[in-house]
Image (cartoon, rainbow, N blue to C red; front, side, top):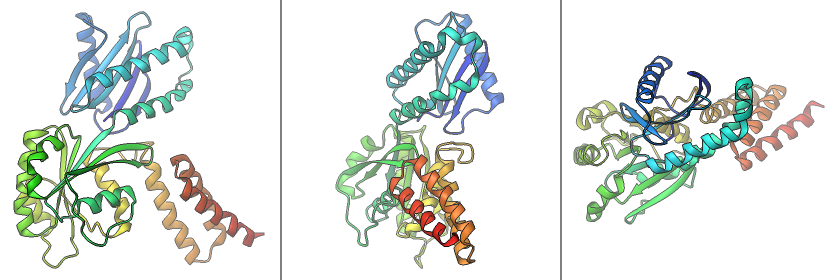
Length: 344
């Protein structure tokens, strides 16, 4: 997953994009000094690399203009793909701004936002859902994808890979078969994951059996972010989240996946596990802003405040349009136009 992007000129940051939490400004300064040390010893090829915790820092330079281009990615991302995309950024930057770099207005760099978003899509995040059969993996996949939630359990055979879009972020969501006859495939499926969600049905028997997956995650993808989703928390025999955390030794989140209104909660959980800053991310923040406005619009309608409701509907429609959600945009645009007629 592409987490942060930096372009520096003469040691000063002139462009920055943040898709997820990795480096604070202070930590970045320390990493920058480390990179400078490497550069002073001579960059042997087109790219340099260092690491910080679970993340790789890939960089390339233009020595003539004293420019430094940096991608911060996960350890499981394909290095050759990342290098190709970083080279593309560098090339397009030099073509666009190379001749005016010494008199560059930083506000012009916003034109690179669409390019960076397209690069983010190409370095797709792999999220794996693991757990035994019947715990709700497919239901959670459909909850995240906003698909129709099945009323009966239909076993997934071998596995299913879904490309899902949350706002402008694109993910690969892997839903593995939970039947034990397919256990020989689990190691291969889980390999290279950026995040692994261990799904349990919150029963003591299932949670204890699921410790197997905790060990599998450690063995096959130790750099992945991982957590447990304590599904079916509405059942009488459901263990508490605290007890599940105690048994599995990893963080757990409460969930009732058959309730479609839990989609936002599930998105928030994914963002939390991937350590994405939902307040700072320009790609995730609109989703939560939209949902907050929808709640406020409902309250305004309940209170009979039509004018305020129309204001909310207009804002919601604008956000949906920016997110590329045409169906929801149309719904709220039409609502706004309908209620505006009552105000004339």
